[in-house]
Image (cartoon, rainbow, N blue to C red; front, side, top):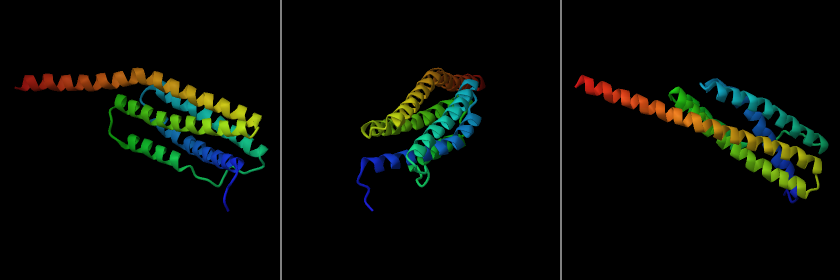
Length: 179
């Protein structure tokens, strides 16, 4: 059967987001464990709690729609999480791993910002003001997380680069002494 209404698309997109958030609740603890920076680890742990709140908001929306949130798998998030897992499987030094984790996390945040922005716009068009308010709140939290990751990256990326530069300088000095 053809889905021919914005409301059907809205519900479909909400189900996709619900799946994405549920997948994230499983991925964030792994990312926190892989982080060497206490601040980054703490950020992932805080975002996990925030993500649980996002799931609850979506469940509230589904309840008001008399619809179940299940039945759809977000393959976009699945792919982003798979890329994040590949990063964690790499043999990066601590600082470089943290920089890579931030990169993976920001991809996730940008995906979520786009998705929440879309469903928020649909909710407004459909006159779902309560939904719109809940979705706007989540959207702002996702943007805030992205900003925190950017701030963390400014320090962590420099440290990762200095760590590599320091190792290279040390190798050059050792090489000169051996010659």
